[in-house]
Length: 459
Image: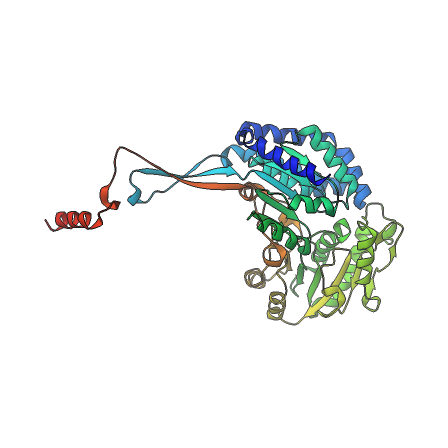
């Protein structure tokens, strides 16, 4: 799309927003219903697109993308009337007699920029929250997942007038054109480097942003952990979507006392879940493109591979891989892996873990496997991270009852459920002052007022 067409699109959405159509709750509810119907109508095509782009099985596509979007829509439909109401708050006695309230209002024209790893979920979840809050939305899906981007464009054209919801496809050029425009809110999911560029451009218009980034999410395995169950859940979380998940366990930080037992069980569980030859497993995904395929291979130190390590350039598949005896100075620990490679580091005391994690950039997620409640409390209290789990991985993002997001280097802001509605809503603080009484104490001349009040007190 040309720069001129993008400029016209933003203008047409702003014009439509100012008709006040989107402020009507019934209008928003109808929009959510149309979106839900479209997702159900194209469920088979969604699975096909995700299989072509990322090698996802239909079950994984529904579990991790389609089903979660439908869940978010249902949550908003059930709560939207409540969320959109004014909320009366306490008024100070000095403002007698008044009513104070907060009025939820949409920002206006919103830009949602989404990544390629969960191209349906991370495009439509923010869309659900944004339209529930009453905004118009321009979606910019990733060029790296072309089949899903094309399908999203088709679905949105059928669902909505582009003055309300539109899709801009393309690559870096279109991204640059969009970021030159004045939006009322920008929601970005992706890498830290691009997130910084988005924030710089947003600053030109003082546009508020939500940044959903990533980072090296640690997974701590305490010696008290149920190793068999812990490994089962770690393998699920790490190798889901071929490791291309922003909240996947990036590395294992294992108590030295149970490391050998942990590694042995890890090998067994990978075989159990993915078979002896994962490269031939049709339900095991692939790396998004050759660029990322080569990048991940460069992070694999052959001398430290204790399981997996093989790859197929023709299919862009890399086996679930374990690296043992890794240190913080190794190449694999210098960047977010975003692939099916799991480095294992060891520790002797939990205080060492907390100290090291807190010297690194703040991760999007943290996981701790332990049966020791005091250690779980200590880690979750003292470590800085976006969100996470005790004795599981990833599932903290699969709920509309809690916000999902990072802070620091892993992002800012959160969404899902009420938090998502709040993200795309400005709450106006309003005092409705009544006219049947007017206290004179605040008006000039203050000395005359003061003397009169003092006289009455002394009398």
